[in-house]
Image 1: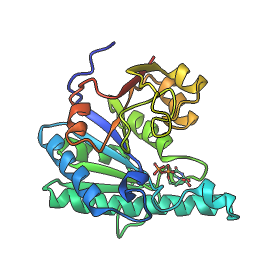
Image 2: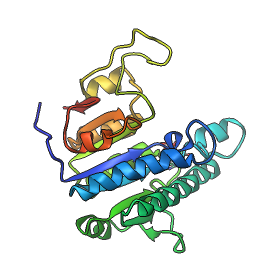
Image 3: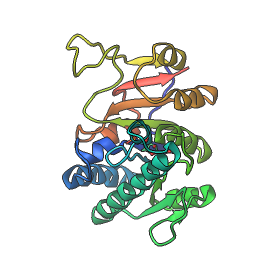
Image 4: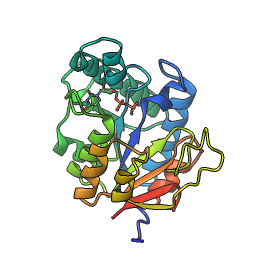
Length: 239
Ligand code: UDP
């Protein structure tokens, strides 16, 4: 496998589910813990951009199954991600980290618009950049946006922080104690076996553009630093 030690610029995808601690809303202790990990990593010189999920508030597909119009429900989902961005921004700044939120849906009072070149400038100045509102388009997921932003702002890796699981397994480790974790995977296998990493759009975008993905456990203290340092934790997905 290629040497991924010491990434200079990474894209970290944080799921909303993690932020909610399994509930609707924001679990302050969890967000504080993640912010403190991020402050440490940025202080060491790694440039970090975050794509924020929103599953702790609304998921468009679920609301549409309950009878809502899919596109309206998806916009609600995107707005939810922005609330998570503000929570993360606040705890990061309390941890001494300068941050900027960029939203794909313009809302000037709370976030800058998404301007990729400006995002890169923020990163170069040692600021954490937090991307909210997904792609600003219904029918997309924040996983897909994470892949897209990683490519557009030229990150070397897409880090997918998971909620309590250590990587990608051949079965659900929460229900099957015999599930085995993969150390390495290729994109085609993830797609063929429909492994629960991210949606197919996100995986194929990474496959077509050779963006490596590291899936790891966000809630183990120090893991964000390990992943950004290129330590082999979790599952590495590449060609
Ligand atoms: N969403 C969307 N377009 C995007 C990103 C997100 O419509 O580009 C909506 C979609 O309804 C999704 C919700 O926002 O269910 C929350 O995002 P996601 O489910 O990806 O969050 P996560 O599962 O990572 O917490």
